[in-house]
Length: 203
Image (cartoon, rainbow, N blue to C red; front, side, top):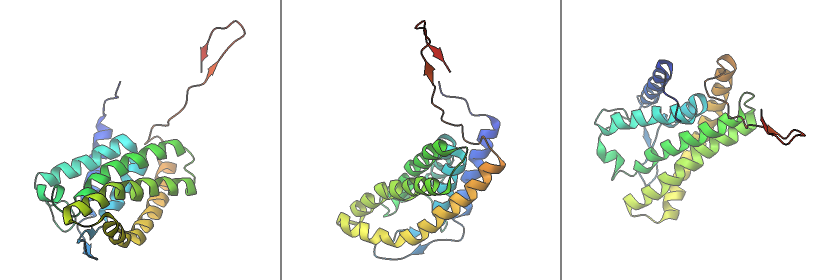
């Protein structure tokens, strides 16, 4: 059964939705042929997954996107409205955020409580880059009528900045989990033992 969200959980979701929105205030940089902007908001998405986990991180990103779709200017550069979720070249990256935050959150929960640097880096790359591009690149190709390979080559402009965001995310998340353990529930495997008499004992 799905656990209910506590007041603390709701506050964390709202805070991270606000953080992602705030990271869009500096605006965006448009480079390359696709006009998909480079934005700091992906850093907020990565942090949401690495600090809050899959469930709360997903809800934080979903809240931000829902408000932006309703018309609030919460996307980078003060953008908002349904057009950015449909025909915009960057529409797929917004949906990719939802997949990415879940991947980061699930993988991070497997690394806690130690949260070793290199595995955490790999987990954040898989969620924050691979998963996001997996949806973002094909949608850009479709909306601009580009070959998939052309959209993929154009997406390479994001890689240097995204790799920096991955490192920042891991360094910040490591300190947060050290100071505030328990933000993400640990995914423990149950262990069963078989006594001599044949009865099962659940550890």
